[in-house]
Length: 407
Image (tube, rainbow, N blue to C red):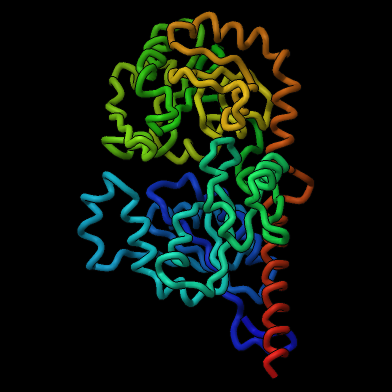
């Protein structure tokens, strides 16, 4: 970046990296890129995709932001690192790390890299890109401890959805003065608008079952098929089965804490063919809020998608199969949005009760949503783009002061 007061020889280069197996992180940062490219012609904004699927999805989302000037670049693995991916991807995020190493020179040419995940920090910690500045958008606004770990304060600028995340980061000593900004939730700029989708040709209430993929946290491995069977037999409810998009991407899911592993298995054809059940293990509708908007009740365990569901307060029900001591644990704060049961055999009475007693939880849900998402009339993507422009301005000023001191 050019020193303050001097003519720039090139635009400031800002990259947005999408380096994952799936699409679920894209809506959390792509709207910021589109908005940023419209706001400041002095920035060269490039979206980096690690798969053709991501690239296609990004180009389609850009249509929602007329006038965006983003560039697009497909990243590829180096020939030397590609072959082991077929083996190691089954056990670890090998491809994501190898993609960073393969494209190190591409990232070295940037001034700022905006990411929705933390693996990218390896460019600085392991691959020597000390000059590159990192902005973190996150890809959800949940309560799990992984969102507040030791890596959370290693970014130069950290975007937070609302006061809940800010306050918890401050308590943990992870928020740096001038190093964070509350910007709302850019995903809502793309999704969550218009009438709620109607996905079934009947008038039954619709439940979305949204289990997490982690064997240490999920309800799926122990009780998931019992949940599906309950709704298969039900004459009262529709079911959308929409697990975390990574659930069925691997034959074995491994929880690194304790090296606990489970097999997601397969979904019986009779569930897929049932007219009042919709089974989706990973389409774009799993990541664009179609299902959380269409459902009348949320059934889940620890996914942050429950907060997206609460964009419109509705009944929630949580399935705890791990005998969790959750009542005073902030990692399970979302379980205050509805009743908690421990076995799928309780679903009949619990569902009826959750609908009947929703008024008891409505105010709590409203408070939880407002504490999680600081929304305003200004779109969240615009607030984030403004924060990046301000951040770059501060960097230029600092560089200008440093340059003057050397004269």
